[in-house]
Length: 438
Image (cartoon, rainbow, N blue to C red; front, side, top):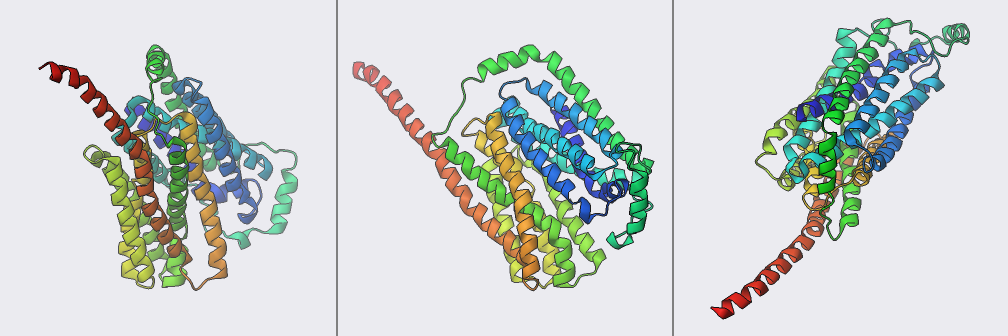
């Protein structure tokens, strides 16, 4: 079961990351330039939020294997349809449907891991998120090397698009809003990933048929759940924790290239290497975390990650003009950010049982942070070009998460300490009659 969960999340990572390297090809396919097609990201993010919310509700009332398989079939259909969209509106709608199906799968993967292993699933949770990072790493290689997309337009910019040519092609394409793309490599790139997702969904349906009786037994035994006294407060704090953590992660990964070239004065090749080392150490440490999670508790891994993020972001702000410090601190920052999200899910499960709605709640927080913080930082960086706004954001987020986690830990452990004291008192009371007889 675990191996197919890893394959499933790798397919999700590939399907999500394929948009970046093929974005320019999709823009040409619908006769638009890149700036006019930026709403495609908004459509995908909106669909993801809706899918996460709906999936959180459905996973509490439906068989999890069946819902995951159905969602992956929907993901396959949208991946097949995306290259055939010849208008921007149809492409944005299809991408929204794709985001919704991925949102259901993302929420369901975390819920399924918790349902199968509970508070013992820290290594499995780390492996799940590592497979997503691995799939995101393989998607650009598949798009660029295997099928060679953007071969004819890889050096194009917005100014390379001739408006007259766009008018001619748009007039020629008015009769068809859905047709075979001119670049067949674009079709094969999406079709190959879609086929891979479809194969994984078949095995999920097989697991649904095989373990249907076991699922009923586990659902009957899962009625006895743990619930912390401050359950809702913990979920709200975890919402904020993931909001700032994921927002800082995506912000640094998105802006480190431009920051290195404009603020530090690096060459573009060096800045590209800096961006690669951030995501490379991020993926590598997620892989190593699978083994660390077998001997370290999730809370310990979060504390270590917070210390690493705080120290590296502090040195980034302190020596913001030093290329050497930027290389070292970036690698440490990427490694420190790697294990926080899966460790946070495993940690909260130790104190209160997560349902589908609960998992969807903090996944929405992470998605909102991914959307809001990079957008706000982009605006602020434009108003204050001489200041390292990106680094200030990472430092503030590290301080916030480092302060917030002890508060969450206190709220999570207080009820348990009281329960233990109550159990000790009851055990002492039971032991009193026997001792008095003696």
